[in-house]
Length: 201
Image 1 (cartoon, helix red, strand yellow):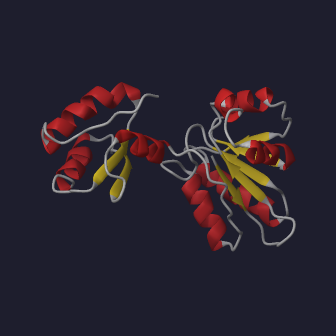
Image 2: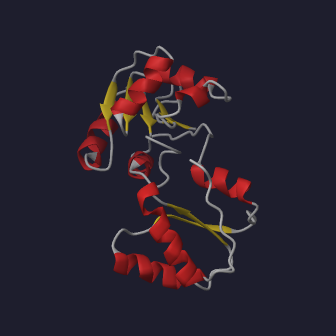
């Protein structure tokens, strides 16, 4: 879970919360009460998937209105959200899964806020990459986060080729329906002797 504070003012902050919207049963078992309280207190929630976030809000009986913010409407929404933040609206950003800003369009909104001198203050939380890394038994001392591989085969194989000599631990994201194919490509480019860890979803 990640919470971000956005404001031109010192007090009160315009709070921008980021957390996974699809795991309400897990939220209640973790130290996320401040994040849940934030969702209750903000004026608006910008959600990557309003359906998934709606389940989270219903679970915690939160009535804060939502607005969609995802990869397909991010250019249109960024300006709207910035205007609201500058005018004093408290906004929470919620990702569909994992930490917003990591392999999702939340990064672009954060960058726009920083450029506009809107304060960004995170509340740390779950990141799939870091969580998987620390449970893998692979060295976390030095690692390279690549996120999702390109979907176009030529670009994907070019990237894998450039990473062949990388000695640090490599962290990737991958969709379940592409996992088998990607693992076979890993064997081809990294060899069968390099250790691999695939965390359970």
